[in-house]
Image (cartoon, rainbow, N blue to C red; front, side, top):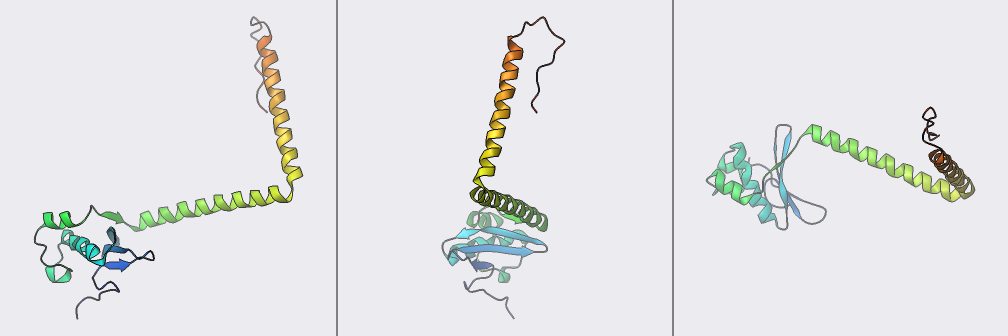
Length: 154
């Protein structure tokens, strides 16, 4: 029984939700993504790069590809995606989601209690102003007094 062909009518070609077509080859734990194309024929031509895995001609969409150079000409350089890449991507997406949720909650909190937010902001500004004044006063003093330390933040 020949390998199943997807909705696109070609092996290794999937239809994306956007209506474009993705060519990919799966081998072992790897997925070799060949790219996203406007037509299923372009994606199927890219799938001809299966030659890189030394698959037999009858297992490809276009058995007329006879050399590695021709297969490389038809398809862009591959992007190997393994389980480690997927894990890292999920981890980054989780961190981004947490940061976005934190920002959303901060916006809600500021909207619900603007008095507390602005009181905190005024206190921070007051503290910064006092610190700047202390540093300026210290800098105006004679420089021969080297025992003293410059005021620190805090």
